[in-house]
Every structure is written in structure tokens, then in C-alpha cells.
Amino acid sequence: MNPIAASTPSSAEVQRFAIASLGIADRRVLLSLGRVENAALILEKTGLNVAGFTRILDNYGVRHTIKQHGDPVKEAQRGQIAVTIEDFGKINLVTSAPDHVFSDGTNKIGRSVIVFVKLIDGVGYRHVEELRGKHKLVATDSMRKKIGAWSA
Image (tube, rainbow, N blue to C red; front, top):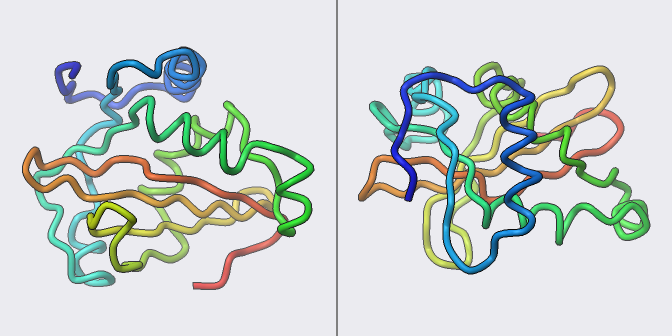
């Protein structure tokens, strides 16, 4: 794993990492997105304590999101819009100032999941993160988007 940096990368840096991640399947690489700054809000809305945690994006989260939610035809059939590399650059905006945040139980491997939703320029983003408590990390699990707001 890469070391965890304290600074928050720019949107362009996150996008460059996402592009590079698409070609890496044989090992985990990650990018620190900075410390979780709104831990009190997350605790209030979800009951999950992420104080002192760092938010990360790893190649598995990028690859999953693009594979599952990046095809324009499939997403249109779901009433959604395909996620693009540029959307990864919006993660900090979505997670730092969400319109809604809630717990969504656990994912397929049993990790607690937090969902952030935010409307940006008429597009609703639904960003899902998993807690990796042992290392005090919250990691991108998946992302979706659609025209209009997501219901909470």
C-alpha cells in the first residue's frame, strides 16, 4: 500500500490516479483523499464513528465503479448516467458536503457502508464507502449518478 498523505489531492490528481488504476489489477494501489473532516456529521447520521479516519480511493474501487456503472447503455436501462473518470474528481465535494448521508448496512464482504448523496448541477451523485476499521480508512466502494437527486 502507498503511504497515507495528510493533504487533499486536487480533482485533476484524483482523475489521473483513476486513469492509472484502470490498468492495475494485480496489486492494490491507493490514493489518500485526506482526513475525514465531517466525522461528527457521519456519526450523527449513521452511528458510525470515523473520527481520525482517512478517506482513500484505491484501484479496486475505481475498477469496480467503471466496470459496474461506467457503461452508458446499461446505466440508461437503469435510469442512470454512466460514471466517468471525471466523476472521481468530485468525491471530496460529495463526501465533504453531502445533501444526505446514511448507513446502508454492510457490503458483500461484511464491511460497514456509508452512502453520501449530493446534487451537483442537476446530476445526483451516490457515493458509497466502506469502513476499513483496522487501518482507520474509509474507501470508495462504488459510485453512481443520475439526472436529479437521489432519495435518501
